[in-house]
Image: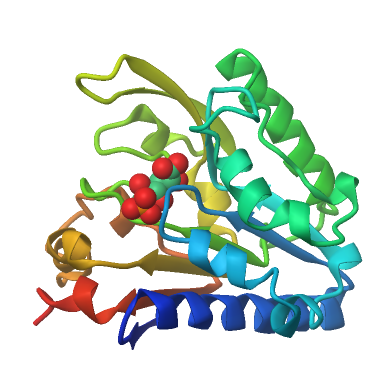
Length: 249
Ligand code: 6PG
């Protein structure tokens, strides 16, 4: 099931995101005793993460049962300005009573392929499946952003990472001209698409063009990475603000 919800502005989008996080967390904890969420990097989700530290939200969450993961990470130390972990730590994690062992950071400081292997092991252990499991479900919630080129997490157009089917985590070489080659870690499509719920957060007029491309009726094979996010059995939700929707029909 795919649903789109549109909000007047970035602030109301952030509130809707925080509300949704609380709803999903309470539902998962009630049903399974824990809530696993993969956070998005970038700038869009930051306002929602900050809202979750406010007592009106934070007091509704059983932080001891909440497990934080990442959808992707830059291959930098955790205190680096480009680190998605650092953004989430500053905006949310340092302000809430999360047990340290519930924070499952992608080890961006390690050599990329070693880091991807280490996180793969961590995910396999956390989502340990009985052999009989028919549908491997991963996260209760995956939050994703949308890049101007249609990338999501660190799955960039044309990247071999898009074709990874037998791993949940992979290393990505990403050149951002004129910036030098930046290595990244990312969840793969199988890991993302096995989630119970996937939520894209898209805000601002700058994303209107790419959003219209991504949400256009499919013509043949999906071209853009974000179009290949198709939950196997979970839900797909787009939380949008009006500015990002201005090019939608
Ligand atoms: C990253 C993100 C990336 C991001 C999009 C949107 O590490 O940068 O995972 O996929 O979500 O590029 O970024 P903004 O929210 O900053 O527009």
